Image (cartoon, rainbow, N blue to C red):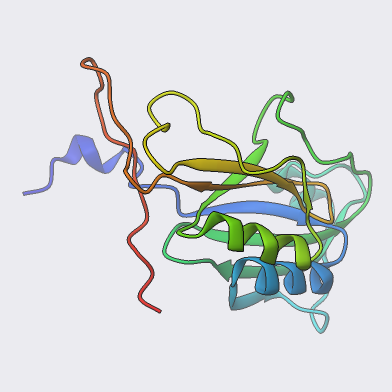
Length: 181
């Protein structure tokens, strides 16, 4: 029996939203670099842009902004990636030191090959693959940040021996299941 109190709690992260300057260029980068698959276009070039005071209010957009394109991607078996192409007043992508969402991390079985693929698709590695922080620093671990062509940070990470936990841990970190292909 489902506990009604738990129905008010989120189940999991369903998708992450990203704004890019050029949806087709971003699609090429995501498909070639991360193996993304297109689920659907929520707003295509054939559709009227989503704009106006009501859209601005509902989505927190600045006055005069317009959503021109919207595409939903699936990468592996984690949350989806909803990518927008929006015109209007914009700022540069957030960095790790900025408040709010600052990167998306992708688990890799072969981080070195994943890094080569992402860089070949147009990303810029900020460093070489390096060790993870405490509780992620088990044997064979590694991570590296890559800047996407539109400025967003993408982390590639591997923890083949898994996390370990302090005695007062309340939960274990979700990890994607191994790829079937």
